Length: 358
Image (cartoon, rainbow, N blue to C red):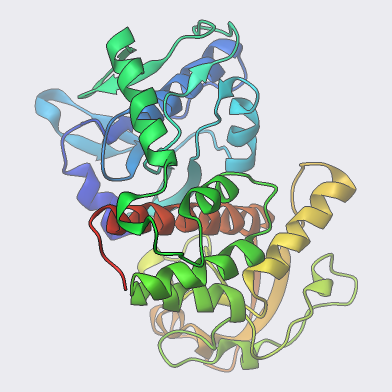
């Protein structure tokens, strides 16, 4: 999500797929953590056909007027994933990231459409009750009724069956199995995306095919700037040096520079590796130091590779700019790509149900 999309959502009313928070949940207490879990679970259990979002850093005043409030405290996706782990079954899929909107640091928690509802609480924790199923009705979070839970199980059972339009077609893929793999964070992304290529070919999902190829093989850059060829190198003692920067393989990472308007950085910084390499780097760090901070990647590039930055600061295009990509941005990229795979497969399931494809 970018700044424009955030502002557009701010103008929408709260609904089954949209909620607003003035500040982050209080994650140092069980009570605060349980409230966060409940918000995620209610969104995951809600019956909807589009991704849900919780915008954090939005104050709703008298008459419903909304204003941005820069976050006083911060969180990362890995920490939030850990809070939910082991307390909900099946674990809901979600992604949290922070961005700058009109000078305010805000957060976005996104929850894709779930095909594994109902998500039940596994133990008493804070305000949560064991075995309870929480659901979002309109803009309110409540306990699901038995009939609602039964409907979720029925929908889940039907979703796990092979789509009727595909029966007997001897397809080279199994959408149910692919969705199960996508929801398993131990499943390597490179192999998973490669196995999704027959899906996008079969259903003629051309935009998704281009996206998959980018993740598998890399791209030169967007906007005609071959940023990879401009990278001056990574110090040998840098923890990220084993990413082995080359010219032809890259994966996108959103770039944030404090004090610089985000609209000037629309051109993303590109690392010279496919998603599988970035995922392996994050996994190696996790194995070596636990799920702590992933070491940042430090680069020096000519200012001309970020034309908006040059114009805004009237900087010499040949001036060397030192950039530091936060380690959590790398981990968030890995999580984000997995969420996109899930969205791809959900769209394919809809096309299958409508009888699309060869």
